[in-house]
Length: 429
Ligand code: EPU
Image 1 (tube, rainbow, N blue to C red):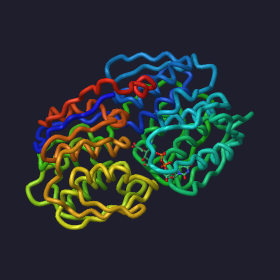
Image 2: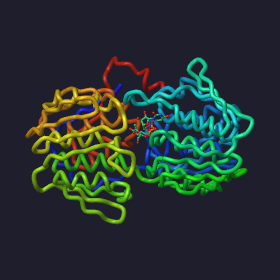
Image 3: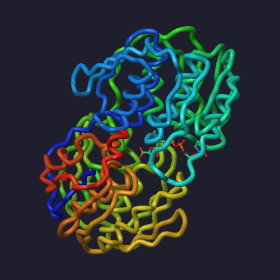
Image 4: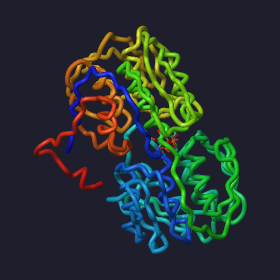
């Protein structure tokens, strides 16, 4: 196992390049199964969730070849058995996308119940409701979800809540169904649009992605495509907050500014300067950081995946800030760790009350999940003294070369092996 050691207190300055989006990649990689020909994916982030997705494809019989560090050629035509075993699925939430894509291709799938970040109860009832609506029967057997049908028939599906995962899974299952599928109350995240663009480039007929009504006219077959994944809005947002927390001056490149609007607007409220260009944004601070309120919501609202990072920044802002988590039940597990660093935060259910403090102090902490881990890195960068962060495998699920990119901005951060600790988790990846 490895940990980060950060000597805090340095301003981040310079330029950083954002990688491809994790949550688009983990949907697009399984989607390749639907194609009758090989596909080439570009701007694929080199993170462990992507490695797991590619490993699942490989273990099922796909040919997977890296053409360069971020370009991969996948020929999934060799897959014959639509099964994703527990050992492969247990560490990654997005393994549930194999349900939709295998169902779409083979009319049957057997996939272990997914793992991933613990953020409270994360049911998949809406996914199963959509599959049932398309005519598939689902059963749970020894931790495996079994799903099958003779024929997938287009249908009208209304989600009880806005759900990214179920919207994507329904698109994957419906793309080759007979007739028209209409998803109402669909999620509108940029990665939903990216998946629709990828599927359409293979010959699918998907309209309305990016709005709350998506229409999918089933097609008989899909061909190969070469496709570049969009930049990661959350990685970009994380660097924006890291720049602000260290009172730095950073140009964040290879981004789509439109995808970052809710984050940019909130940072400006806090007193951060944000200068937008076509595909980059410059973040700097020349005055005090001030309190604000944040409530996480589905896109285009403020993303839950930025909640721990913005809360960390607000620890250093003058006054009392209120942060409300509007998506998940339990996304404040990092608060105890921040308190060890001198933060003044109290949490009541889904609401955190943050009293700004003049500075944070380095301390040994543990990353409880991916975005919380990134938030602790930000805290460590801004803090006085040394911060050691354990369980950084969470962070490596979603950030490509995180510490190298931060070092490129002047951070003092190194990754160290912890001797004698368990390597079980790494081996399982
Ligand atoms: N929900 C249900 N039933 C369902 C599906 C969702 O009750 O069948 C609830 C969830 O419990 C949650 C809400 O609906 O309260 C929204 O869940 P959603 O389905 O949108 O989330 P997800 O698909 O599990 C994806 C991302 C998360 C991100 C959320 C929200 C992937 C692989 N994961 O999760 O990303 O937080 O959407 O935007 O795309 C991360 O990257 O750190 C991460 C956790």
